[in-house]
Amino acid sequence: MDKEQINKLTSEYQSLQEQIQSLSLQKAQLSEQNEEFKIAAAELDKAKGKVYSAIGGAIVETTGDEAKKELKERQESVEMRLNIVNKQYDDAIKKEKSLRQQIESMIKNENPNSK
Image 1 (cartoon, rainbow, N blue to C red):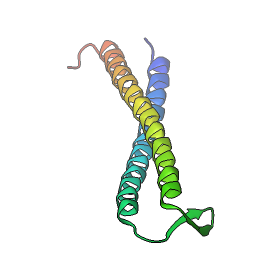
Image 2 (cartoon, one colour):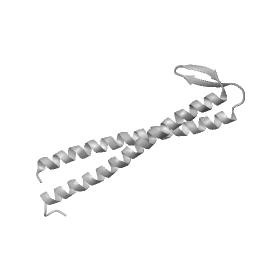
Image 3 (cartoon, rainbow, N blue to C red):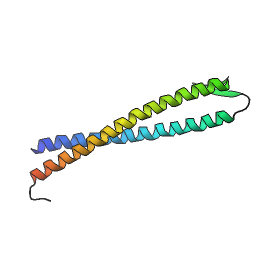
Image 4 (spheres, helix red, strand yellow):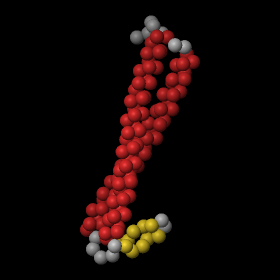
């Protein structure tokens, strides 16, 4: 293995680390949204009287059932996206570990005297 291959793998490794950071941020944001939806659902269950829903930049009056339905759909969408991001994150972590081991092995083979 030559230094060019090591440099290529190192560059790929750095790119993968950036991807992992991005996925980690997405996971955090989606988890936060999911928690907000749970809180909103609990508040909606306690609501008495008029219920309002935000649609784009407008707030309109709606029924409690319609608001619950809309909230549930949005929460399911976030949960689905969170599951996808979690899988992508897990796959990237596995690839990162494998790539790190490959780079370390190549470096050891380049420098057999180092421990």
